[in-house]
Image (cartoon, rainbow, N blue to C red; front, side, top):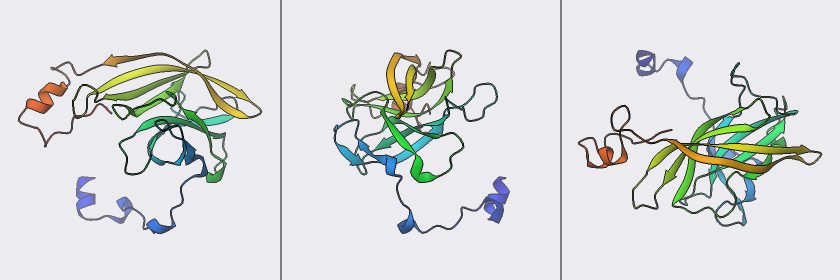
Length: 197
């Protein structure tokens, strides 16, 4: 595939698009996790809640769920939100916002980045994500974390009932995966991207 990219094989080309015609989804105009005010947020990374056995998008009580890293443009904020739409509804404008997963008192020092999510047998959603903590003065101190989401589904749609057991499950061990200190003090600084995404 590398040679195909070098040869500019059209099969792997990015389709042409006019950036000025791209419209943000309506659901991205929502309450911001840091300011608490309604803002127009940008969507960064996003992932659908999946069935852990088949890998397909889960049908969660008639809805498809997406977790997305979002924030205000040109600001240091990246927090994760829950979006939903009727299962098999492909209309972009029908997506709705369930809210910021970790509430509305977020700070720039503690952010949530990319991850994955599955539906547990009990109907809760197990979220895996990258917790990035810069409150200790580090440029980025990424840790793999997990939390359990309980959701409500009613005539108004999907809402977050609770976020339980949020905790870090892995930090670089220094042998199989470098630590932040190895990255920041090592010879690969500025050449090696330290990330646990």
